[in-house]
Image 1: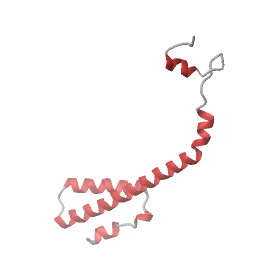
Image 2 (image 1 turned 30 degrees about the horizontal axis):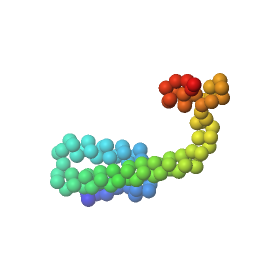
Image 3 (image 1 turned 45 degrees about the vertical axis):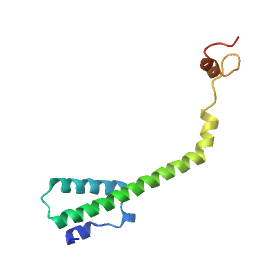
Image 4 (image 1 turned 90 degrees about the vertical axis):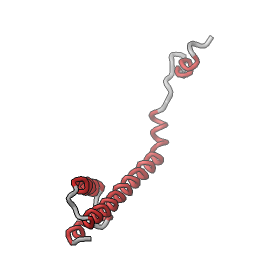
Length: 104
């Protein structure tokens, strides 16, 4: 890895998802533009793969956190938000619609 690339390498714990994604995009643009030596292109590719892994790990962590939040608060949301609509007779109006009309 060249000195230029070595100084751009940041430990993965200290870079945010947004920063890693921005740097990954810049890396891809440099690779697509060409005009690099084989060693520079290889070093950039390696850095891009490292940044892609960081992004993937950050997304997986966020998805896990969202799942945990849904699990923790999901029961509360079901109790308050999913109550069936009652018709005038106090019966669940959704059943009639599903059965195709009124009951005899």
